[in-house]
Amino acid sequence: MDFSGSHILSIDQFDRGDVEALFNVADKMVPFAKRDRITKVLDGAILGSMFFEASTRTRISFGSAFNLLGGSVRETTGFEHSAIAKGESLYDTARVLSGYSDVIVMRHPENGSVQEFSKASRVPVLNGGDGTNEHPSQALLDLYTIKNELAFRGRGIDKLRIAMVGDLKFGRTVHSLCKLLALFKDIRVVLVSPEELKMPANLVEYLREQGQVVIESDVLEESISNVDIVYSTRIQEERFNSQEEADIYRGRFRLNQTIYTANCEPNTVIMHPLPRDSRENARELDEDLNDNPNLAIFRQTDNGILVRMALFALVLNVENEINSSARDTIWYTAGRSL
Image (cartoon, rainbow, N blue to C red; front, side, top):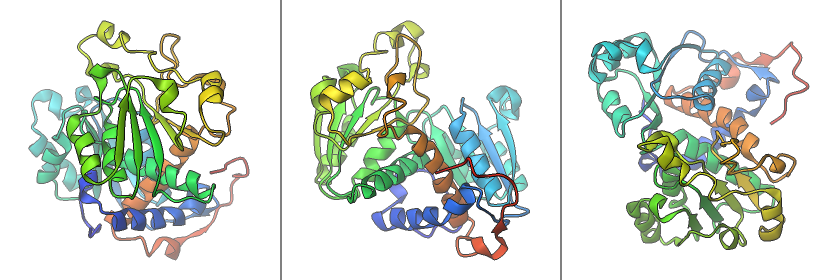
């Protein structure tokens, strides 16, 4: 892929070389994300942040990543605060906002909406999540985390064993991650969900067509006993017709320290795209795992900054200019770590 000026809409755009190139740039962002160094490479550039669906991590992470490269952020959140509430089309919104911005990040509740928006945009558009379809940057930061966690153990991504657990039907993060894993060799994927929330059949078939082993199960304990990664997801209650329907499945696959100790290998890494549901009837990842050194969920969020900085740098073609305006920070940063 020629990243310069490109929209980032789907994992389908990436081959393995693209992923590795992105990760190499992400590695170079560590001193800036840790606040050891400052760069102003995007000084004067404006990010248009358009989130028409609830977000904490993704919205703030994209904004922080752009700020850390020296750029400014202008944002709108929710339909009620935009002209779309007055009947404006995605086409018109894209034409207008792309006149104000150098790059746009968009989240929207409808599948394919970000791609539709990008067709009218005059600047690159990054998909921050579109309905149940895809979440490319989340999958990329997840794979970057997997790479780093396995490297710590002297491993690469090839021959990965991963269990994906929970709402695999509506969870767009696992949809994108499956597409990424298909680029690697000898991957074993265990899909753990209720029958009604299974991974879409086309993604299961795609993984198998790429030579990966896929096992489907509705039993947690036996499914996490021989894996490198347990990737848990919450029930996507906003995709259900009612709260009552979502409650049928909530809490079905709880992982706590007792279950982890009894079933997982000692170094099995625990991941989650967040937010994890900490309500009493949910707790897909119990808080008693917080002191488990293999809980990587907060390393994931830190890695999100690195990957999103790298995406901006590549799309805006400044990946080789990061250090040209760099200097050391002068404020307190000793308490920060990645």
